[in-house]
Image 1 (cartoon, helix red, strand yellow):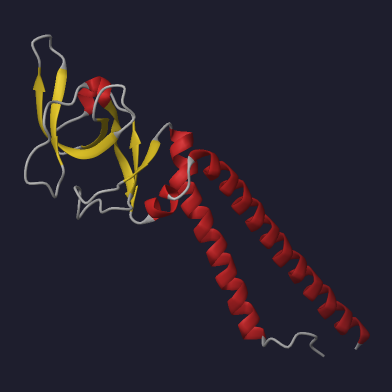
Image 2 (cartoon, rainbow, N blue to C red; image 1 turned 90 degrees about the vertical axis):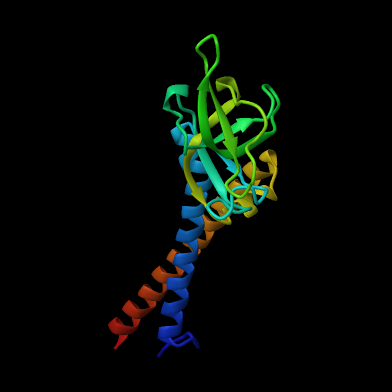
Length: 185
């Protein structure tokens, strides 16, 4: 006799969906925060349409620091608008030059922009070159500040672990009930 009023196939489907959600959230967490941190990269969120269609607003772009000689026309870089200013822009390198001292520098332009950005980008302004980008994930991360992000991650991780433990406990309980039913028959 079954103690649950939920049909077996529905219960199984619910568990599959639950695990897919857990794995999906875990994958997003890894892509957005864990992998960049472990690799020495930095995630940024594209906030304007200047890089559409490749990097539309809401895209999480992860940049890795690179040596200046590794940046070439065609690369997408994230750089400070002014040296020392935390405001950054992510645009494509369209031209490379060298000043009179031999220091390399670049002209950039947003893919959707009609004109190149003003001035040259200097090596000290560059935060990194695009490593990978994930559309729409940036919308989630842009709503949360740095300190809130740490708390949110802890809550989500603990919640997912608790949920997984509850599912596991329920599965064990079900298995024991089936074993007891078989033994009493």
